[in-house]
Image (spheres, helix red, strand yellow):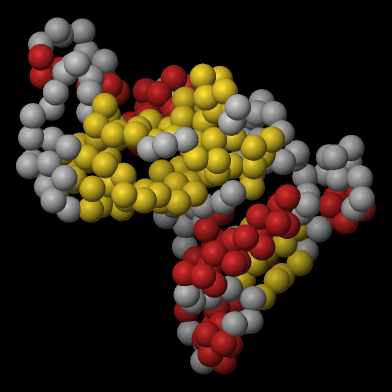
Length: 241
């Protein structure tokens, strides 16, 4: 087994943007990486998704399933020694994924795992710094409008899409809103919310206009902080109204 003297990394915490998803939809992971080694360094992140009853049955392996250009997005560079760095990694769930619950695992490797050089020098060997435990984190539901699956609300599920407007209050409040979005998705309703659908580089005003245009229901989560922002025309909440 090879070693990387002076480099060491781990994942203190990570969070998925959503717990319920449809095949082909995009998912993002907010991940914190700690460089607990002696030097500034770069890591290569690998994402694994597997059957919860048999982790050898990989549904998705980012290192296996992505082309080289796409895998470059999983190369997280220049993490200072002794510091934590936060990243947001986006990926698309496989279109052919079966309906059900899946486990997820994250691995950190040195960049040689990505580039796979042919040189057989010691310093170019692939080395895995860290991996998380398998964690049941993703529920895959049928596409919107699948009437065979959504038997109890056929008419509802084929017509309703929801744009959720809320303010970033406490962590618990944000978690509650995301759980609401997951529950709506679980029941066949299309949901647009910033944590899922705000594209990298997209202006918040453009995102709001897109959400209002694409959805026929505008759902406002009127917390106390939301009301203050709305009344004083502050932030995205104030603009939306």
